[in-house]
Length: 111
Image 1 (spheres, rainbow, N blue to C red):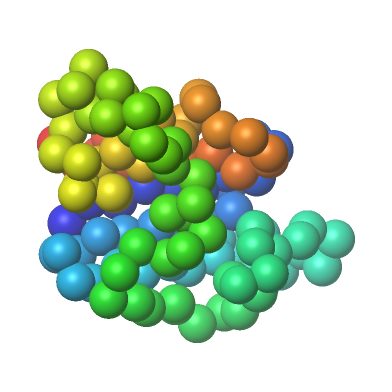
Image 2 (image 1 turned 120 degrees about the vertical axis):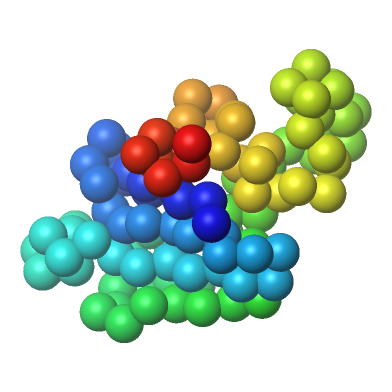
């Protein structure tokens, strides 16, 4: 299992998990969910107390990844398989994103 913390403008919004190649989960943090003033991180992931589950990386997070030549270069430099979308997300989305959302590896779990 690999796990990441999802932040919105530096504030913890939820947890993203990859259990295996065909099992992904996202769940909002209780404090984020309970605060009506805080928005959902995506229109495709509305604020909900229950866990979102998918057999592929959620499109919102997949779309945070670079494409084309930039993706190939990142994968080569970081020594990440181009098909490892979650690995690339963990390696790049904590600092190289457009917008308010960042994804940071959970160091306590990903060892």
